[in-house]
Image 1 (cartoon, one colour):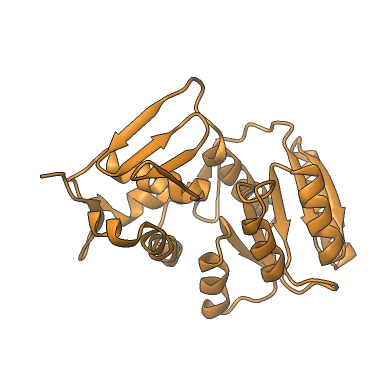
Image 2 (cartoon, rainbow, N blue to C red):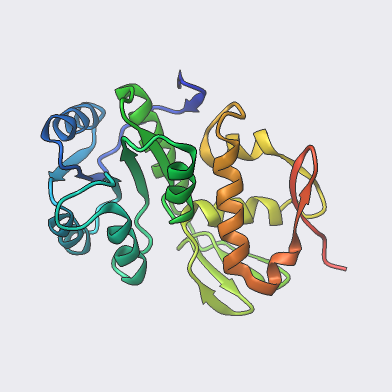
Length: 240
């Protein structure tokens, strides 16, 4: 287990495929070197259009994505990924020089799994990559959990709302599942950050709020099941 910058993650390198889409060659090379040293299979491209083409063709396990890119910017790549069944379940770590709060919120609301700003610590980058891949792993065996209008297929990370499939990111899936499995019990913000993101402090509270906002938007009328508990966090109300 390794700790750094408020993160606690088990350091178990596995041969996942990671694609770096970054136009600054020096940064892309640095990221590639550190991830390869951690045991990952890494490829990199320096153009947005080429990056999207490679994402759809190779379907990597994770994309490390810059925002400012020639050909196609990072937000446009995200939109195209979300529209395509070959890529809409691929997790994305946004790596960018845009460090303002509004930029971070826009990135998280666009559907990325995490957001890291430049300059960055290579060790923190690896820990964040590990945390994303860990929560994106399917559970062995077909395990179904149902709660009211929600049904979770934990083997395929597939979610159904009123028996109709609804696209959730792996992070949204894990967050909602965790709350539903503890219906009626208020869940502390910091506990949710630890369980879902692997963070062990409240520095990243906005990450939780932006994901919750996006999740509620997707659930529509059924978002009423999720309640904000002031001063504590969130809960899913019990079925009456």
